[in-house]
Length: 145
Image (tube, rainbow, N blue to C red):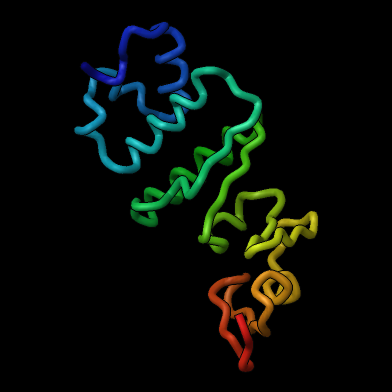
C-alpha cells in the first residue's frame, strides 16, 4: 500500500504537491528517505486544511541540507498558514521565522525574530557571549542552574 490510501485522491494529490512529493504517490513510506517521510507527515497535517501547524523539532534526525529544505517548505507554507514550531536549532530557524520565544522553565518573548544576548541570559539565567547570530553561546562566569 503506497502513500495514496483510500482517502480522497484530490486531497492526497494536492497536499503531496505542496510538499513536493507528488512523484512518490505510490511509494511505501518505509522506502522514503527521512526528509521525505517528514514531508509526508507535514502533508498529512495539511490534508485537513488547518489554520495552524504545530511542529516539534521538524528537522530532528535528518541531515542539515534536508533540514534546510524542510525549513524552505515551511517558509512557503507560512504564507498561508500560521506555523508554531519548537526547535533547538536557533541558527537555522532564525532566518525564516517572524518571532522567536526562548523557553527554559519559563517563556522569554520579545516580539521579534532577533536573538539577543539579553534574551539568552534571561532564558538560561547565566551570562553569555553571542558568537554567531545567537548560537552557539559561551558561558562566561560561574553560574547556578
